[in-house]
Length: 366
Image (tube, rainbow, N blue to C red):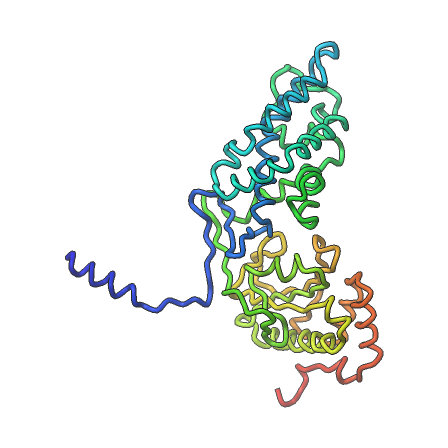
């Protein structure tokens, strides 16, 4: 029996394995949020940003209850010096708390962050206190029974000043650990990576495409390169998520219109530098949240330069039956970049009616 098992093991080692689709799994010893080969997680956060989020969550679980208890004391007993001491005491071991310690990459990034930005993090908590942080919004201080604020209450925002965003104030403004597109979101939005209870969700991604690689006339993008090529790129990017295997002709029609518009922009040096049309094959790639979903339906969205955290979606794709003119109209409505809007408008005024309004689905030869 042992010889048979050995033979099977040897033969299995030589079985060719497909590398067309990678399944990204979470590290068993790390949080369930999977990390893509480029170092980003499903939200597009790098290690420094993930560390900052873990740091703030860990600090708040300890600091907010302590500060709330201190501020609930009579005015004669509560002092600003005591609050300052609480902040200093909490910052020292912050990177060794469970939320940051359990993952080595996060812990190291946290330590590097605190080496250079500890004073900035402390200053953010002082701003929070000066704006009324630590006191319940109803003016009641701690709860009526005088008991300590729970972790759940601390994270609920009930003790935060109106309009306060921990992610922006600490990970954006104070430390610059997270890019603006990520820092504008509430911390709670990063708690759920789409995995079900008790299991880590698997996010599929094709192999990283070659630089400039195109498919059906559009820039090829995968789940693993989505944030790099679409969200982080300083340009207007129209992202088309299609399902060619589920709807061959719908994809063919949409790709023909989008690919032709990309070619129109490529002929203008000024316009093409700030504009791109990208294609993600949803059959093999799970677009990371908050930009993707489980629905296997094609989408076209404009990720406008300077406003990547608010993609604008095409509301009616008409089963993929789009004309170049309709794509150009969508671009003009959703872009805030003058060079993009001007060139799209020029195209609508300069090209022939056939180029703009061709209905490829009506062509007899098809």
